[in-house]
Image (tube, rainbow, N blue to C red; front, side):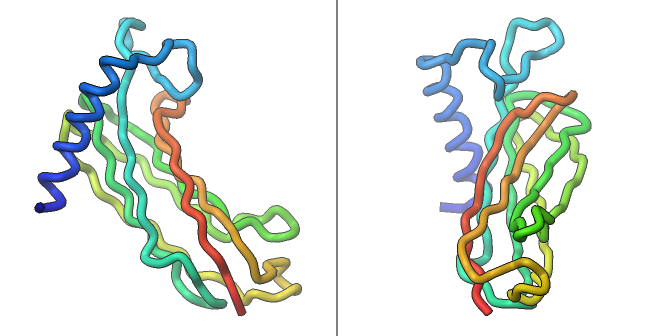
Length: 150
């Protein structure tokens, strides 16, 4: 099935499922519309080009977003692969405008440094947290796990 058709169908089915199991509006990941009555629903689908990387390789993330309404100035942030000194080696962000029930796609990429003690980045497992925020409230969060070797 075509990816552009599959994502909206998945979103619509999630909306119907969400209507049956609606969460309480005081939970932190639900942003309310301006009239404070209807939750804003944004679904995010994140994929990395692979799960295992080596020093100096480029990490590529593909992100698809679907919203239940038009939203302007949605901040998409991807941050992670923290070294021993708590420095993030993956740190990307972009502000986007979402259209109701349309898929918005974007890509982030970052080249990894050397995997050694000088950079504080030892071989092992790491993650990248991707979030979508609107007016300072987190709408959706996903985490990608990956491994890095020398």
